[in-house]
Length: 132
Ligand code: SF4
Ligand code: SF4
Figure 1 (cartoon, rainbow, N blue to C red):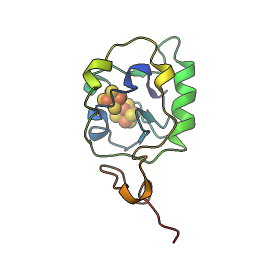
Figure 2: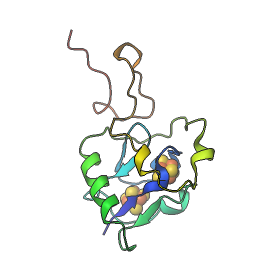
Figure 3: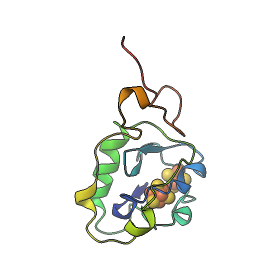
C-alpha cells in the first residue's frame, strides 16, 4: 500500500505535506507533487496535512490513473523536503473539477537556466547543473 497524490493537487501545490513525511518520498513537478509508491511507508501522516485533500490511500477506488502518474513522475522529478511558496492562485484552483488537463510534466523549478534556484529541493536532485 502507498499514499497517492491526486488531481486536486494540480495548481494548488501547497506543499504542507512534504515537511511531515518521515521518509522524504515526495517529488516535485512544476504544478503538482507526487509520492514515490515504493518509498512511502504508509504512515498516513501527510493525508490530513493537505489543505486540498489531495492525498489518498491507494485503497481508495478509482485511483489507478493517479498511482501510475505518481510512480512515473517520482522517477523523473526532483525530491522535495521543504515547503516552498505556494502558487498565488492556489486557493482559486482548489476544488476545481477536471484539472487533469492542467497537469504539467515539467519538473519543479522549470525556469530559464540563468534563473534556476530551486527552493526546498534536496541536494543533487534538482539543482541546475551547468555543462559549460
Ligand atoms: S499539501 Fe496537498 S495540495 Fe499541497 S502539495 Fe501536498 S498534496 Fe499537493
Ligand atoms: S503516507 Fe507517510 S511515508 Fe507516505 S508519503 Fe505520506 S507521510 Fe510520507
